[in-house]
Amino acid sequence: MAECWLNQEAEAVPPRYLLARLYAAQGQLPRAADRLRELLTRDALHAPSYTLLGILCYQQGEIAEATTQFQHALYLEPKSPLAYFYLGNIHQQRQEIRSAIHDYRNALQTAEHLTPSWDSSFTPEVLVQVCQRNIGRLEKMQREL
Image 1 (cartoon, rainbow, N blue to C red):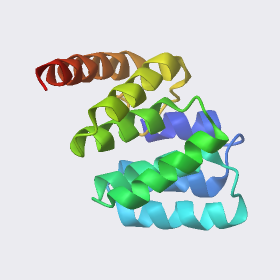
Image 2 (cartoon, helix red, strand yellow):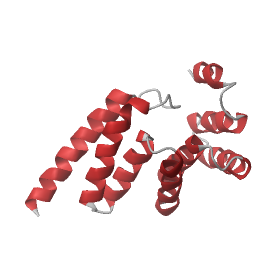
Image 3 (cartoon, one colour):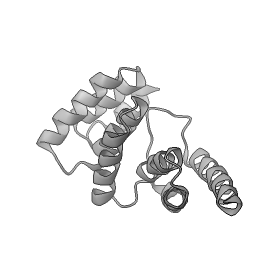
């Protein structure tokens, strides 16, 4: 599976980004994050690196850092569904219902821009389903307040 996206993107993206995705797929999150930070020191405008770094930080419990990385990603690429999705998760965890709903709706509106990830189970269809379910739950919570 990893070979598939490596072959598809080998000429289009920086090697450190591909290496970071490979490390992430292998569960080597700190190593993947290090490669992304190296890349971003050389190419501060590579939006996918900010998104992936945000996801890695999120998965390691570094929520403040993840938030910063997602904000950088959205500044550079305002149609990043994963950045919106994870920001929605962060706002939901913080009980910031309106912000979470807003981010999940943005993720829905940009879902068509979802690019292949190391996790092949996370498709645009799955993203849409999860966002719709989360919005429904949050709107119910909002009504009950």
